Structure formats: C-alpha cells, structure tokens
Length: 88
Image (cartoon, rainbow, N blue to C red; front, side, top):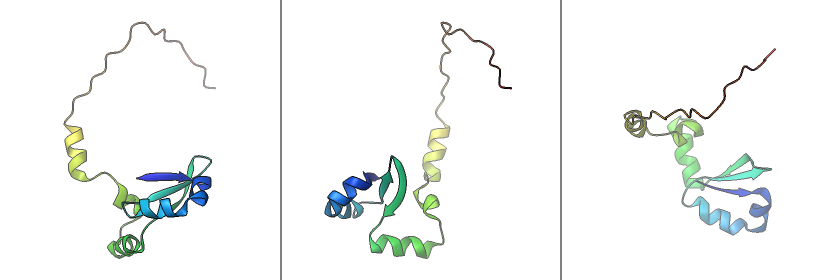
C-alpha cells in the first residue's frame, strides 16, 4: 500500500491514480491517514463483499497461522537498570 501526503497528492494526482491501480492509496494529513483512493472496480468489489475495508486489508489467516509458529524469545539485557515508576 502506498501513501501520499495531502500536498503530494495535490501536486501529482495522476501519480496517485496510477498507484491506485495497484492497490489502495492512503492520503495523509500531518502523517495521519485521512482518505483512501481506490479504483472504481476495487470500490465495487469491496462494497459487494459485505466486508469492511479493515477486514479486506487485514492479514490473511494463513499468514497469521504461519507467524504464530515462529518462536521468538528475545534475550533480556542485563545492562538495563529497572526502577519503580509512580503512576499515581
């Protein structure tokens, strides 16, 4: 997925449209996504599935299953001094 700042988008709409042919293009304002540019075909495909955009863009279950198989046991650094934090 590609993203453009609102300024980049305004300066080169054609580039954003070309990028949208390959997938959703996020338009950001101060680094925060505010809009998504899709081709009309992709919009129709998404609106017919009954799924939300977040469901469509979510990680496929097969990939999630494969990632769950990876063992990750990071070594804790002994050089870090732990201290109590007052959260009151």
